[in-house]
Image 1 (cartoon, rainbow, N blue to C red):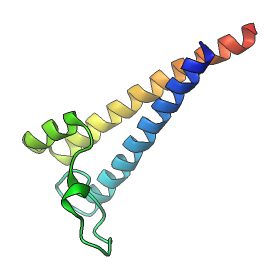
Image 2: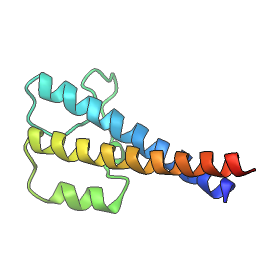
Image 3: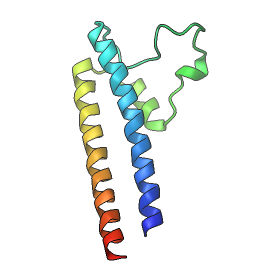
Image 4: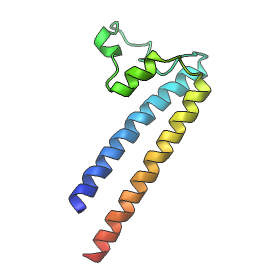
Length: 103
């Protein structure tokens, strides 16, 4: 049980990290007046290859094919997603604490 919980916590932490990076990029783009979703930084020296722009997950590809959302909508959705992941991580952490206290 504990091993599975540790793996689940790590998975959630990685998802949260990725969302926070995207969230930071969105904030940078939103603050600079860009109206697009988070993208790679403009300061990169080498031009991005097509593989750099390819979505990693199938649902991201489907989202890119839909109409682009306004930055405020993206901000709201990402905030909700991060909050949900944090709540799930808190529940896993509480479960691990309970397990440790029983041992």
